[in-house]
Image (cartoon, rainbow, N blue to C red; front, side, top):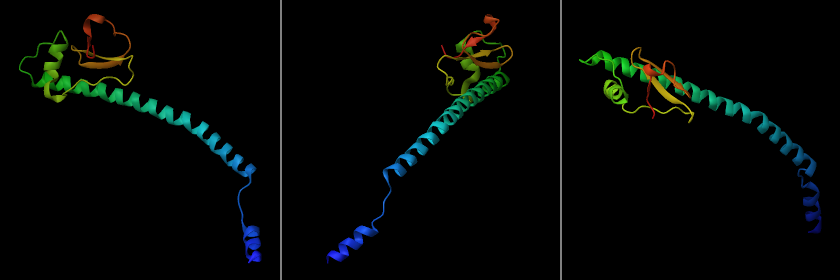
Amino acid sequence: MFKFFKKVKKNKKGYTLTELIVVVAILAILAAVATPMVLNQISKAKTSADAANEKAIENAYLVGMADASDTTVPADLTGVKKKIGSALTTIPKPHDGKKKFYLNPTTGEATATTATPSPVSSWIELNP
């Protein structure tokens, strides 16, 4: 019976502490390399989403201007929301909390920026 236990003990294999430390070190290096890449992709995705939202605002406004019987250019946010109407149920917010969407009702151009575009009088802030 003791021969059986000795045989089992000799056949028992495992990893040494050094091997385990090397594996953990390799995993740490891979994580350190991959993390900035993932964060960069998240930043690019937010920028792309803001650009898509700019286009959605522009298109909704232009559709609203084309469909409306009253083609006067709105002077404030309430007028812009009426023109956008059902084409865009809510005005999106930029993913960067410092930015705001602005719309030039004369040209129909929308932009997301931290400062009011110039000339200030021709732009309406959409996220007050």
